[in-house]
Length: 477
Image 1 (cartoon, rainbow, N blue to C red):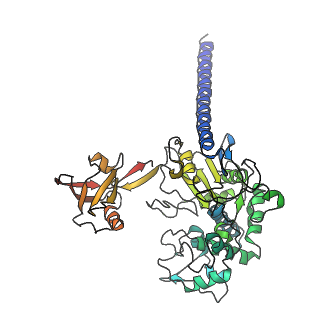
Image 2: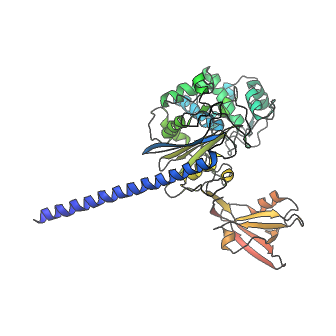
Image 3: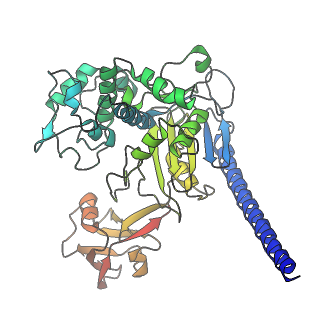
């Protein structure tokens, strides 16, 4: 009898646990549905009856879903959907780096090979302090090469990139002097990624597009990720628009392709995202993707934050239990973002054929499960981790005095009870440079845990001194 009683008790406990588990899953699913509904409302509010659109793709272990609104505006009245093609701009860089990793895995190249090995002898690749630029430096974007070369010859950005040749690249690289040692720190470089793509072409004798198609798209069944489009694909290609809704020129990159030449769809990029998150296993590519996600350079700079190869986090806040990376891309008429939560195996892709409402902040906030409602759609940022005092500064237009314009919540300045309107008379004993806000911001900044002394005065002239410790805090604006 006692054994039967124990069995009944254990059985009841298991039933309770099963019912509780089901309840939790149902509650989580309902919350996800509510959040997705709020995203769809955001899309309707901003893209219904507009000449452009946006597609948001969500993916996790339970599957994927698409949220859409707006139009292709390609001579038809068709709405955007998961098979709509967009230019993906610099998101291409993740493909370029993955191609390199694939070639290394096949034994065709080595990460520490000098770039000069794969270029004509006439090209003088710059070095510094005995260090030369390697293939890894190009992929990790720490080569020291600049954001862009200064020998573009087109009229406007699209023509600059479209007409840039390998010959021009060779000329610029040969005459460039590195400002930092290769590998020293992250420096975002369209030029560096374009050079990497060009080197891969020279090594294989194949075009960048054919390499992406053969080595990435076919294994992942990404049938719409291309540079040159078929007639059928052109019918699905959204027309791009600038910030004011004006028609934008398309990018038709050749020798600059590795920096941003691809076009893709939400459905294709969800497959790519799934492989990066190991939600679907590609034996050839997923292990290489995971190697690319390792942080190589740590930074508190909001533009890039901590950077991998070439994924980055832009100093966004990681909710408990999450590990977030992403990469954005944009051309004259399109913007794209791919975001990865490596810990929770969640991903997001956002694509649009306009420039006013940017996907990057939207994507970060989706990974953070943060609301979009009530925000200015043209000024959406992810919740970010910032190191500092939490004071926003400006210069008084009449007097030129340095003034605290705003105190950010939960910051050292907020906890110290400082308020907007106070005049900053000195920073660590240094009088603020006249009419030079950038220099004032440099004085106020510094590493986490360091202190700064401020001499302040209120509107009545009452003076006070305060010492603050720079600390990490969140900003949501």
